[in-house]
Length: 538
Image (cartoon, rainbow, N blue to C red; front, side, top):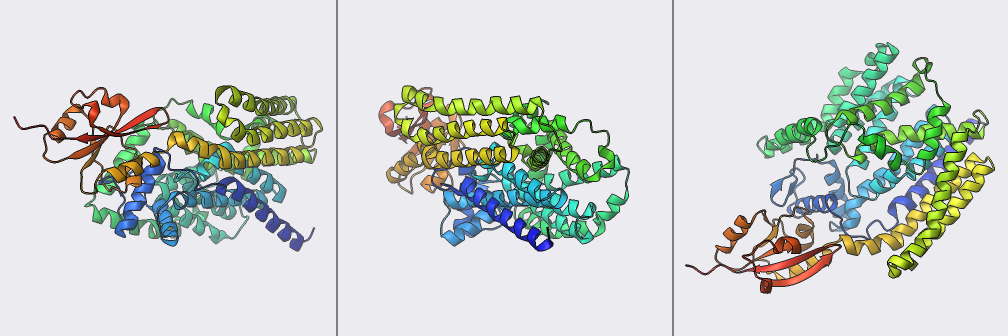
């Protein structure tokens, strides 16, 4: 096959993957409201920056926001200025676009290092894995970070492993800088760990020289330094101090907010990569033993990529399942190679592959058959909205099992990809809008905005989700954290209001039920708007 034919096929594959990602990540993207805790916070940060014309200092509810750098907020600001407002669509758009780039870059890695078909299978598996679908449809910075980290890996590997030009490594530094602006110093730490591990295991110190550090570090600083300097100057050093100490040192060593045991990722990674985990497990055993890995630089590089990310986050006290997003392309490439080798009869179909995959997709089919029955018995109004997804699960699960039994691995990939894509389309169109009524505070917030005068103080009791800020369009809603703080507000002159959950209201004896102005239930939580009247002078 000639070069022109290969180039055409590659372009076709990119188009197919674009269409696949578009269906997965963009269907109903802006149709549901903001879901706490992260989405309302990010939306409110961008809303304040949008209203004030500020592109430097992120704040939320009157406080400096030092948790994450600026890149995601810049991308949402750009989208919001084009659309004319900050909304659910513009807030999630950067993650969805980054999801497309994440999938494409995985294909390019597979194509350049293993072949176009391996790249296509790997990219399709990545796009339809549980974690990637969720992160590309959710207003999180991790998909944007994951894209720039993956691009840094792509350009770095192309240069160091002689698949591209030797100066492509400089593009890796640009991408590392953007990764830092997306999530922080992890954008430097992870690539540096991978480079060091590769040099040590290979005992090839020329890799360090080939990394062109004297040129790369200034390029990285040129990308990163301007905003860090501006935000640090604007906040008298507070932003950078909190960012480094609280959100890097303390978070890594102290488990701030998300402490988990060492083995945590052994339980979450298999779930995050579903349904392709059932192929990744036999793939790990199929290529065992790994004694010759040191002499094979390309497989070694991808293995160390997985290992560096997995061990780094496992050693951290703070753990969240989404932190492993940067290593999922490496797992997808393993699956792509495995399926391709099965299709070419270069590997036998192991009993583990046959039984694990058949059991899993038989279970998927059974779940598809059971969902409508369960919906009819438990919550009858959900029967019709669950039916399309249930049909896809049942039919897709059965077809996949048939193709496994017929020893058609490429058709298995097609069936699983269609199963996940059509299921996600059904979930996006019918199920997520239904779930929205149990997650969204927008309807209640709109009522509050109508009732409470713009000049009247509004407080919230023991809650920091920020969706009330965004939907009532209030820059600051002070949080009252104790009965004593409520009592202090009652001593002030004038009328004010407070948002409070029903369970908290029962613990505050100084508030009478007749002071409730409006009530609304969001899921299992009942919210009240209380009119606070000043206590009479003694």
